[in-house]
Length: 105
Image 1 (cartoon, helix red, strand yellow):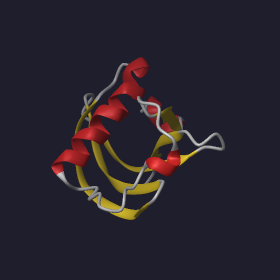
Image 2 (image 1 turned 30 degrees about the vertical axis):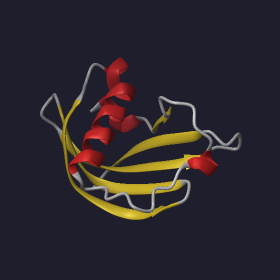
Image 3 (image 1 turned 30 degrees about the horizontal axis):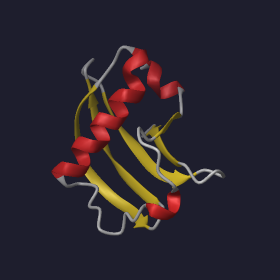
Image 4 (image 1 turned 90 degrees about the horizontal axis):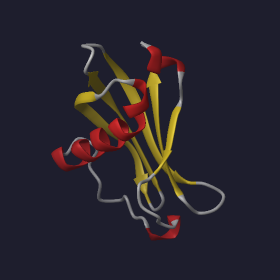
């Protein structure tokens, strides 16, 4: 799959400064969070001609002020699936970055 060749990064779709984001109560496997992750990932993948159709078995690896790390499975519109690490963190300007990194297992 082409997407495995790329580390996919994106600014969140809204302007937010990192000192305003508290992820401490986020559960990566909740339906609400998985829907948000799918939506964000699909925005990033739109130029690759593929979409995420499901996200499941999400584990919360780390959460807190300005940081969220989730790990779980994603299923794509081409029938493939893979595990992906999602990270949200501030850059040096204080803007929140979303990162989806496919993991080869």
